[in-house]
Image 1 (cartoon, rainbow, N blue to C red):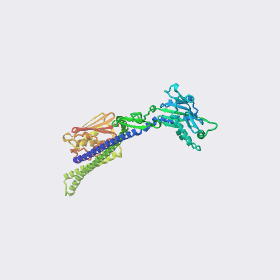
Image 2 (tube, rainbow, N blue to C red):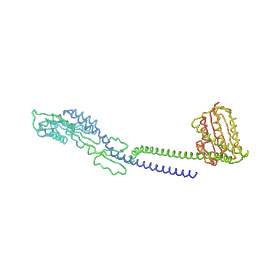
Image 3 (cartoon, rainbow, N blue to C red):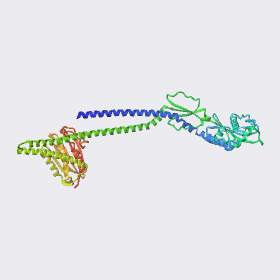
Image 4 (cartoon, one colour):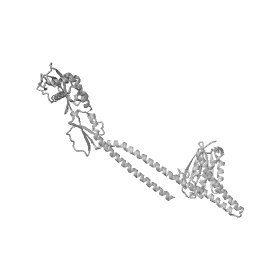
Length: 555
């Protein structure tokens, strides 16, 4: 049995060790893969999230280009210097990346101009040119007028957009209405760090412009056109970083900017700016130690989830192992119970059968032989009856199928009757008792007697021949009747204390070699619970045990 138990222990230990090693390897592998995934994810984010930085950083420019510029057309070409100055002031205030604005107060006519564009009968030239900006001196606001050119050259900004206007007018299909996008793209010119915008005329005016290309109209018409050229400074764009834990540094740089090779220590990426800023880019750079913090912040929740998942797996495995272990123990207990119960029944049955055969086969029996066989049959029948009664009572108490009787008993008399009955059975059993603070109480005498008998039998059975002693005490303590059964037996190991009240459990020792059903103390526990009390035990190996029973005091 010991060898089988040891083999089972080794087998279970090997399985547990294998499982722990396997789970640890899987757990570490999962953490490694999770960290690798987190690293790749953050590195991909480092490359892809730059688009969000660009979008948010140039959002003011898009607002300027799509909303503010078209406001020029609201004036229908009738902007003067004062109104243009106020309009520019709002632009400079709202959009710091606009450094200077040149305002061309221009006319379209059939009369040739000296400064501007003359195509066929169509003429387009400035009357006045003004510049506005925070760094523009007050005496330099007007750059040009028809009456005073100051040797100022109108320049490419005006001429380029004027040519674009003429080209559009020449190809204009007057039978359809042009789209807003078409008009906007043909009445604006985007160049490096500069946007030039011409107010969009009405469709009727565009038709007249087309006629003016081919002939002189009578009377000769004159149309006002306003052109504004916005000079932009990309370094004044405010860079907005929505991922400060991802991008350590972001700066504006020319397209030709090429930093030193720092790939071993840093991660870097870049993205080109749109439109007039296309000669520039946003340059992103972060040290790998800085990125590691973001990687860890992303990896940490994943690691916790993996830990939680594997914790559940380990818990399930432990519960499965625990249940298998309990089932194995229960099977062993039931197997031992059947074997021991068979032995307990088989011994008296065999004795009865032998005695019966002797009586049957004998021709004559003396009076002494008759008394001997009668005593043997009576004792073995009592053993069988006692065992059956214990099993039946155990089952009835567990199922609560019996009633708890309440009779008044004298404690001294009750203890003395127990002592006398056991002295008759075991003359070498040394009993002592004491009663303090209580003389009578109401209880079930049959159940209490069974409890006393079982504890007394255990005290006798598990004590060496020279120490077969039992002291019973009864006291009234805090409204409870407390019984103590103190013996000088072999004691109970500390590791087994929590198991002795379990059904079919038996401690392996020399006193259980001849068989024990393992119901005695479990039966005591059920009896005490049924009587609404509690039972505990204190024990030292080779010193003895003390069973303490606390029952409600009903006077």
